[in-house]
Amino acid sequence: MKISTKGRYGLTIMIDLAKNYGDKKPLSLKAIARDHDLSEHYLEQLIPPLRNAGFVRSIRGAYGGYLLTKAPEDITAGDIIRILEGPIFIVEGIEEEEPAKKELWVRIRNAVKDVLDTTTLADLANFEDSEDQHGYMFYI
Image 1 (tube, rainbow, N blue to C red):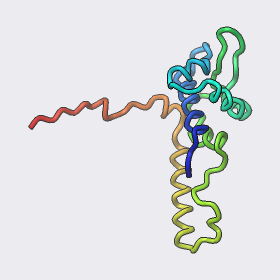
Image 2 (cartoon, one colour; image 1 turned 180 degrees about the horizontal axis):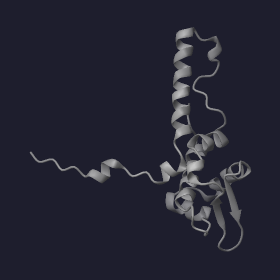
Image 3 (cartoon, rainbow, N blue to C red; image 1 turned 90 degrees about the vertical axis):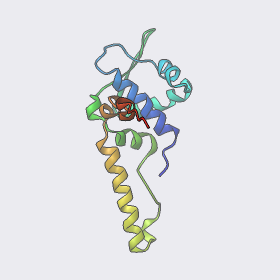
Image 4 (tube, rainbow, N blue to C red; image 1 turned 135 degrees about the vertical axis):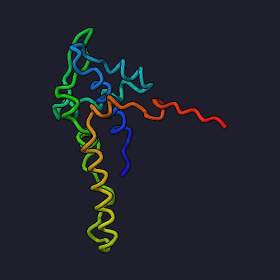
């Protein structure tokens, strides 16, 4: 399985909106694009499927932008990836595989699905790199 820029940038949009959740002020794609050095035009193409799925809503006007329609705890990475990338496949045509390999592909697919479906936007928005937190110092 390869997640394209659609999935990666879609997660970027949604994580930023999750960080902004609770503010009544919408977040613009221009700001997201600027903060992450991405194409605003490309991000604009990712919003319609997310809006159609009911995860974001737009606010028009000079101070417009986007807001999440659901709490970050209620949206998973799997939801976003499926909306933007389609179903999760590890290997196509596994029906023709020999049983041992077929079982391996199914187990890998299930593990990937489990990670995506148990990781919420809240988890991603609140993530802190534990390596940076500890700042271990070693002396010799």
